[in-house]
Image (cartoon, rainbow, N blue to C red; front, side, top):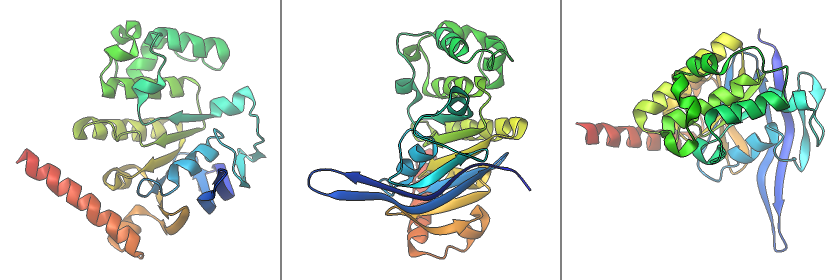
Length: 258
């Protein structure tokens, strides 16, 4: 059995304003295992990104405990803890510094996290994610969407993380590039035994990479299990609606190609 790397237990996230309180996450539990992917799926506004940001410690929960490698995380992470939890954002181009070349961005990470990052040269790192060394001299606006996403994955890998939190990592990409990114994540996970939390509304990519899936509705998990079991025999009407919508999008795409 795989080792538990990160857990978030009893997570509740409440967004407060002067006029009202909005419960984004209600008593959710997730456990990420080394070498496995846990997917959280649901429509926009279901609470999945709020949960992911708590797991990444980019936001504090209103209630609940997050544990990394058996240690409860506080409000401030150590440098090693921050390196151990890496996030791949939806729009990599916007997340990258527009003033920096790819190489300058890697050099900055190496300065901050020395000697954690001395295990691989820049050229070999890009090769790991299917990119050539010539891209080191480029800035984000000179990269395609797929290239930018691979650069962001390379930056995360440089830190040798225990956990990758991928928040809609393929939604800004076309179908062909989307498949390549998912295959790349699965390959790197197998090679380095990384635990992945995949947050997505794209149900089509879930069975190809995830071992566990949670279906989220209005901040709560309404169904959890293996993708094979849940997608073949959904037990909740909401899951049925998600699957029907996903099938409709796939059918529409196939019709356009025909």
